Amino acid sequence: MNGAFWARRSVALYLLAWLMLGLLLAGLIVTTTGAGAGASLLFALPLTLCYAIASGFSAYYLCRAYPLAQRSLGAVLSVFMFSGVSAALLWCAAGSAWAALCRLALADADAVAFNRPFVALMLGIGVLLYWMTGVAHYLAIEFERARRAETRELESRLLAQDAELRMLRTQIDPHFLFNSLNSVSALTMIDPARAREMCLLLAGFFRQTLGLEAHRKVSLTDEVALVERFLAIEQVRFGPRLAFASSIGEGAGALADAGCEGKART
Image (cartoon, rainbow, N blue to C red; front, side, top):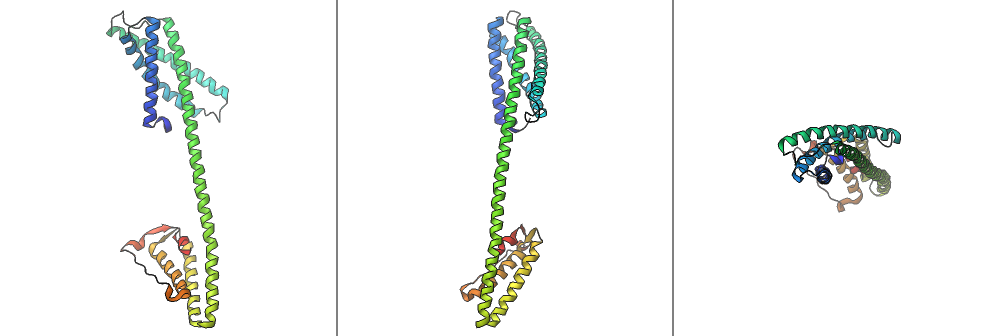
């Protein structure tokens, strides 16, 4: 079993529920057979916990093999009918053997009378408990499926937001190009040398950008070099009003990051 039934809290709650059922079974034995309370507890609690483990594993794998969304209701009911009766019969056989062991350890007056009426009662309880376990497993499986669907939906939303950000970045690039070309146009009239310098910087920047597009990961050195080219272009536009400095720690230049070129261009 995995998912909700393998979580520690869920396993503890599962066994606690079966322990309470064992106490109820012990009380039922006392009222129906007249056995002593100690003998009833000794008989009912270990037998119930063993049935909890056996039926839990059996019902879980049946729920996995017969999912409600892929199997017909008749097939599911037939399988659980047969499995429930089979598990209850095995539980009664184990109960008969355990009752014999209890009679050896206790006085006959206090031992559980494992007669036919009690076997029929135990068989019916075993079938019902097996079916209840199957229903609980189906609920846990559906809950886990719903949680995974919610997680996938959240991941899809995050991917959609990331796609929107990437689209915004592609829209920002033309604005940078338009502003740079307008600056070049203005500089050709007042300072041709700076206009030529800006054209060369733009050519180098876009050449390096296209080169980085082919790489899924970009080293920090290349990333910083691209940023410096971008800032050099802006410095031609803004002059001494824009100043920048960069410093990379020793050995940090070889570090790589995915998609850095997209961040640098924006």
